[in-house]
Length: 318
Image (spheres, rainbow, N blue to C red):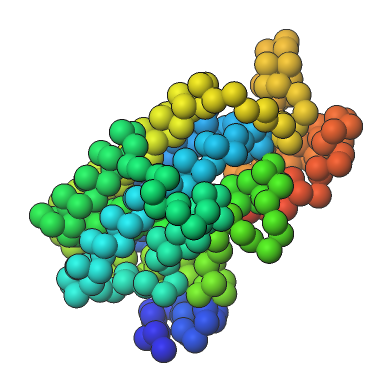
């Protein structure tokens, strides 16, 4: 049973497995680490989100070989991260956010790699040049400055519980993966019954860490650095994709971004409309729905897109 997280004013109470989570919706301060991270990494988040590899992924333009290689890259990253977290699990700044049962991913990624490569998957994958600096940095901070593991944990796990859930739906549909979850174990958090309430718990634990302002700033800098490492992996996958001859089916809007943007009207861009809708603009939410309905290929995918948009909105609002 996890301890309750309490404060003195208005509470919301939810259950996450056996843990009772009591979070004060009104108690967040601009100096809380979670708020500083959200604000301080906003630009890095947007840059990563706008990498060509990510944009293609969100449209469903996924090469199976690249997805396999991306899964291998994640395996090496999470193996390093979780190795260092285990070594430092009693560290005063790591212990409060130590949730191995709920969060750790390397075993799930191993099952995905066995699905894609077979029983001898370990002999078929290797640490790529684009992923190695990320892995090396995680080991470096784990050994020399463990408090910075907070940044790497926040960047990876909170992303997996938010936007990562969109990628799961897109990948399953685009790669025609089994509905039973094979190949996508990474995205399933069996130990977490409510992503929203668990993220609230995790952020409250971060905010309770006793940290000086300069240490919080270093964590923000390290989180931005982590986004940079992720973009290096994306760039490497994008470049690799140019050399792989594999047919890719676009299961997105059915029209290229250039075709939709003819005439230069940004309001005709579905990505812009989706972004505005996710930011809470009801006009663009309606505009996006009408735009989808005008394109026959999108009528078939509309139900799936609405579900994905809901998760995408949650990534920003939670």
